[in-house]
Image (tube, rainbow, N blue to C red; front, side):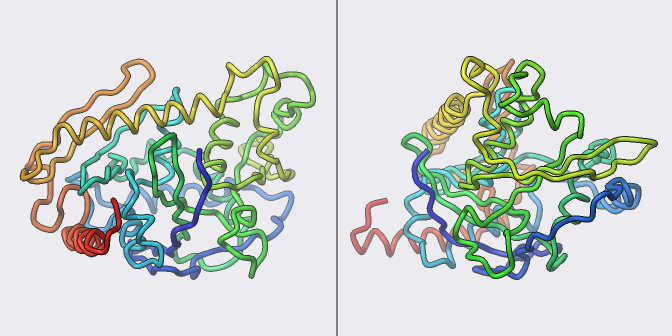
Length: 349
């Protein structure tokens, strides 16, 4: 992947609204209390999320992708955005890099940009498992600051010859007041069972007992945004409790398999897979979207077994009044205005 450049950032609030170039929701790291039971509060968390109304359409009134694009249009780096081939969230790029994960995506072409979002309805109670909550509880234990939403950085990178602008929600910054534009100041928080603490060390020569699928995923999530280490919380399961018993800062290179075990996880192979899928989606959209036709939306299913399957989304599923494809209509109009001005001034898009 090419060099990373921050385009902008934004704070997203629990009501779906966002504030551009804002660090209002950026939390900072604090040492967690050890030991502590990370399972406390699970039932209330499930009840809270399960109470959300089920979506009747795949396109919500307030969407994170709108906030991402809106932040880019209001940034000082609109030229980077205008030259991008793909606009997405980090979660999509991460899933496309993992050959053992399935992805369900909605995508469309706005101008020359491929716009991609996850196709996923509101969380069901069955999906809100305890491990998800433990990860949430660990992040709560390790951070201080506002609880009114999340903070996201927006960065630009090339994946092969494809220029991608994407947003990534960040858990926290190492210390209050550090420069959030410097990737090494940002922190990703993860948790795993204490019994794997020794097994997952490359230095102990036990690579066959290591969960490289898990560690490889952690590696890619951080590598995409230039974060060079992960803070891991180790937990111990006993008598129905999930006790946090220790933490460890893990440099990214300690998450990679040792020589001879590259078949377990290879970052180059993962990045290559991501590039091939993005390239295929771009070529498909450009071949199927007529110049004077209404913007089409397609749904893609990506899996290791079935490969890439695409079907067009029926018109009755789309909001054709307030949206053009996936994005809000006013956002698409602003993109077109910026592109017109840029091209009139000689900028090649």
